[in-house]
Image (cartoon, rainbow over all chains, first blue to last red; front, side, top):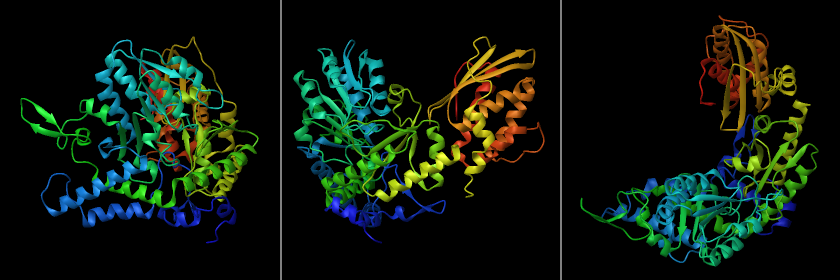
Length: 417
Length: 150
């Protein structure tokens, strides 16, 4: 297959054709057409390295972890704990005890809202969120607010989808107990100035949780430099398996929090009178973990590291700019989310055709996009729309695929006249 | 190009979606019920007035895709003047049409609704076609809760 000299020129450290060959699903056809996958924001495809790592677990090193004295249990435990170290390095956490394996970002946020929230929130306290949160960073806080009498305060966004930092600074008060905000908006692609968010919150000694689902695949993360208190992301969005994710928390915060789930592995001594809990990170990892998922996620991070997140980010940014320019040429199309700092998301509406109809027509062209509210209904309300069409970019997408998307939108115009 | 799209988006469907009949809220209606599709955020409210057992007026208010608007528009045209039992029978047959289930044949004449048969080849769109109908049934049954697509 011929490599695109344009791509090679723009991103000298990144060969997209080689990357594409690492993803078996990309050679699949959909309705007799090549799969064009623009839904990585919902879930990314998996490279061969991840698929193989999962097979290898079951074929050569599987048993339950942290339990057996036998060889296989030790081997599985070593592989899982090696993956924890891989994650620690990936996000530059200080200590592996700060890396908690959860089912995904959703569970990570629920863990913090429930465990930290019920211990620290009471009547009249305030939780600050933004209007562009995914439902998974809204509903857990609503649940704990109902239980504790705390209230949600919502930071607005401007018409281009940028967070209103003045409004944020004005919302922070002595009542604020925690700030929970997305790092990158899943519906708009806006990159939030999280350094500023954290700086302002910390001036008032308010901890900050960041939802890093859409950031982790696209930018290098550094927990220590950010000085963030909690950070969550999902394995399946960084080209790893689904059903596994990471909660990072500062050790002193995690140590002070009560367990979230009770069960095996999270205990020290159990009697019917009293149970003492295991140390971090196991205190928050009740039950048999998603062993192959953890190891698969480790393999995904190894794969990303081998390519270099900086190279990936530069390549994707070029593609985002190309896509933005191409879509902007379509008259009846309006891009939703035009903030100056953006990552990997092209969300848009057509004047006269509903996103659901667009999605169906694109699907018949082999093009996978997400249509709907993207689990971010408050964002849709903010722009007074029911839904958008979202093309989200992964490391394996190409300019030619953007051209296919534009051609597909031409077919939409044809049908709807 | 025969990929089902031209069957799905026939001119009569596009016409109903661009110019929906019996469109708008009817505050004075005897019955109303709302339907939500949480998957795509589409919403529809169906308003019915009854004259004894007969549906004398049918209107709807909605935001949604071409399929859901066309289906709701055609539905209001079709059920006006029908009895409650006839409207329910029409829904049964329409449901069989868009899901591609067996059992079409007997029962009421679907007339223009036949144009929505293309939906059966697009399983993810069946809920769009049936949303207003579920709301209509809920309005007839006097269900207070919002209808959701299953």
